[in-house]
Length: 277
Image (cartoon, rainbow, N blue to C red; front, side):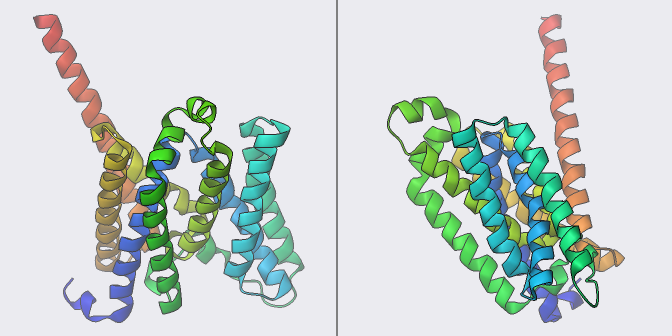
């Protein structure tokens, strides 16, 4: 394992994983508390449409995904706020529609058809220096934004109706959060891919939830858990020569199931003790 640290691409992978953990720990905890996981899933899969459009127009597919995904996030926000459409219907439409649009654009793209596997599952070992800088800027921006707006975001997260009555800018904050989800998804596509980015946003927050009493405590724990998962996953993928993104996510699923199982056993033990008393 020490030998792996001598390679620049491996050090870049570890650094990108740590910075991605900051993004996922903060954004993931917030959308977990606000029950917005399905929205994040819809936006992440809709990003595939932007990648396909980028190839069709002959521009960088990540740039295409950036603007396309931001547009989808704004459209979802507008339909939720204005049309009062059921959220599950919207998510289903954009989830399937984005994927179908991406495949259609790729089929119309002349010449060589790109390898879709890399966008679906990513490769954290191939993060370019400019992409590393992009992840760092996003991580710093998210930390500053949540540090400044934390009291308002916390109020909206736990009681949106009361926050609205108190004249807090709940609608604007909702759009900001959706935009942050869209940007985070696009930036993390190269790290774990479209399919797996939703898991990286969800699993650390879900693991941290049982032992967190506050939102900021949950964000800190989810960030640390995500750092452990990404670092361990990268080393395991190096040792066993297996895909890094899939290893990180499977490791997260195993830890999550262990936490769930441990919680169930602890609750059963306490119940038995109470019945004995």
